[in-house]
Image 1 (tube, rainbow, N blue to C red):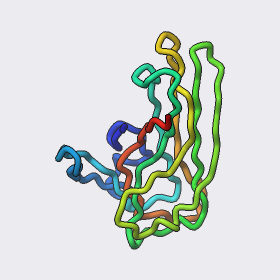
Image 2 (cartoon, rainbow, N blue to C red):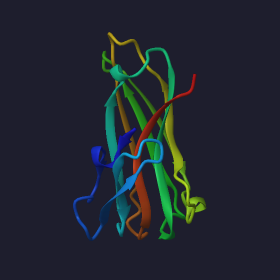
Image 3 (cartoon, rainbow, N blue to C red):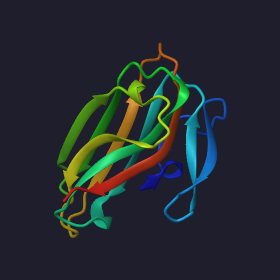
Image 4 (cartoon, one colour):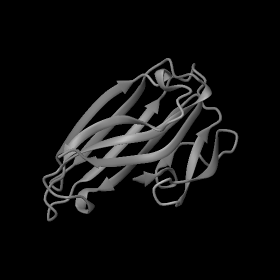
Amino acid sequence: MIYAKRIEIEHADKPENWTWSSIHEAQNGKAIDIATLKEVYWMNIKGNFLTSKLTPETKYEVVFVVKLEEDAIGWHKPVNLTLTLTMRDKTTIQQKQTCLLDTYVGDEEWVDIKAGEFVAPPKEAPARISFAMFQHDDTVRKTGLVVKGVAFRALD
C-alpha cells in the first residue's frame, strides 16, 4: 500500500481543502496518516510506482482505498480513474474508467475503487505504473472523501 502521505493529492497542503489525521491499522497497530477532503471543486489524486518491487509475471489490481463520510457531497458525478503502465522501451498501456462514488457515502468500511489491472514485467525490465483518480467538474463542490492510499493486490 502506498499511503496517502506518499501520493500527490492536489491542495492537500491547504487546511481549508484537506485535513490530515492518524489512524491505527488493525492488523499491526501501525499509525498511518489519512487525508480528509473538506472542500474542493477540482479533485486530483495521483502517483506512481516502479514494478521492480512486485513479483514478475503476476497479475495485479490497483485500487484507491477510500471512505466517504456520511455528510459527503458532490459525488453524484463520476470520478475518472486511469492506470498507465510505461514499459522500459517507453511503450505505454493505459486503462481508463469512471466510477460513481455516491453509492459509498456513509459506509463505515474502507472501499476499493479500482483503477485497473496489469501484469508485472520481468525484474530486469521494470515498468513505471502511474495511477490517478480525478473529478474536474468545477461546478460541483466536493466534500467528505477520506483517502487511506493506493493498494497493489496480486490477483493470481
